[in-house]
Length: 217
Image (cartoon, rainbow, N blue to C red; front, side, top):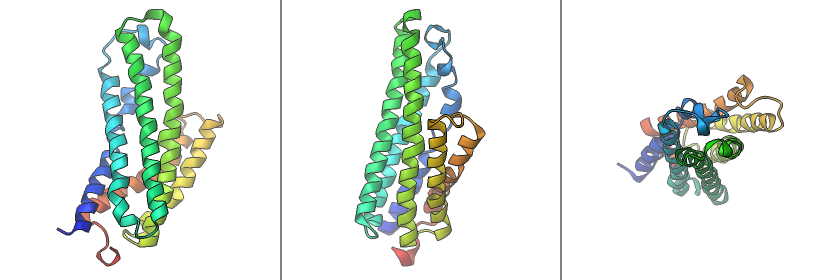
């Protein structure tokens, strides 16, 4: 197996791993309840969600680091920018998980009604940093990655174009939510994320199954 094929396999697996946090949409449902800190029930769902997000953060860094030796041949500055953007994205994910686990800690410590405001503030902080780290930064990453892949022809250009077109759409959705034009869970906000999600998932499958185009390595 060539080094290029090994790189594409690892990158493909890591890209697919970035989708393991999808269940957090359901897992984090209870923590958005205003009285979560004083409510009944286990904290297992929140903890599992946090673990899944940490996996995503580490996998995200891994994708950029793995692809860097290949992408730097096209534009070293952009390839390095992709690594930096992924690290920044992952850093925001870690901070967001820290906010949620802090709520769990307060709940397990029996902080009581006095901590309700603190808990609600931590949830609000998580929601805000989620928008930055998992809406805006992925768009930046995929804009850089789409450009590098389009230029290199390492994968079909149609696939690269999905990332390049999807990134501005995701930023537009992010701005709409940021300025209150639409709600965070509005259908329009979710729709703006579809092209980027399709790009990253399809890229993961393509790299895993076919790898880089031999003539372009």
